[in-house]
Image 1 (tube, rainbow, N blue to C red):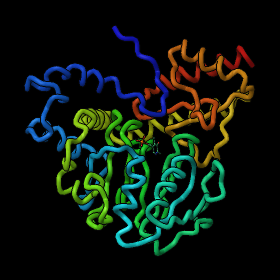
Image 2: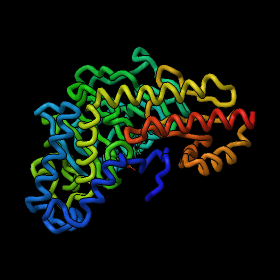
Image 3: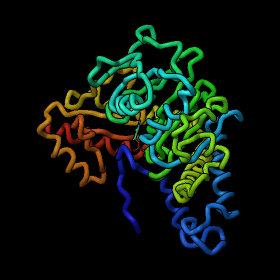
Image 4: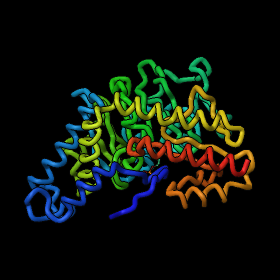
Length: 361
Ligand SMILES: *Cc1c(COP(=O)(O)O)cnc(C)c1O
């Protein structure tokens, strides 16, 4: 008998228990082939079928149109911070970036190695707690692409709308929000995400890219970062992260079984709404983000009396509510409520918060 905690980690993060159980049951012998997925050749028929099925399930979930490639890569979202300019500049020299927080800033910093970056909004914001209206954005119609971060994992600032960049391809770092709700993939030129938040284990990075944007990588682009070469090789230009890919596939099946992304969106909104309601209605807690752009996935909050934070965290831990410490750059608390966090976990956290406020307030 295992005793599982409610794990509110921002990433690597909680995975669906049913997925872990299935992986455990298949660990030594995957469907009668006598070996673990970890031990299989990535070129063998077993793994090739696992890989293809995972891609198809992801395409089904997100409604990925046929003229988009789905790549299963390595190097994390951070690797894509350079992969994107290397592939998408296509002879251009300028790219637009929207700065909504820490991850935007990191993407911007990396992109400046390859091109002239125009920060179309947020250049003066230290840590934005809101998102500027599109009328404030100074987009460059000649930019090769426009990059934004739909969900800032650290500050908990999330877009609940899709920017309109005219004919400039829109690029989105969806690391901490992909699969949390339905999206219209056709609005994007490229979507990317590290797996360890809402997809599966660390080590896998998903890139969904429109066909016409690939094939023009900078000549010095390492082959493993060249989207065209990877697409032509079915993401197997070299050995892919096979076990992470397999586990992501199990998560995709699980999501389908839950009713797909409409069902997840409804559940995710409900989980987030009830936690924000407690934070807003109890003077003991607060969250500084503009209510119009509060994240469904990452809910940061602070105590009115910051001296109680350590006590809060250690009592929460003792109650089976773990990894609630805020990011080292902002302090306080952060509850990450990814798809795999059951609503019962949020209910337990809320109960704990109300009880803690009563006892300490
Ligand atoms: C976690 C995260 C990253 C970094 O992902 P790695 O896989 O560690 O490179 C980038 N962007 C966002 C929005 C994230 O949440």
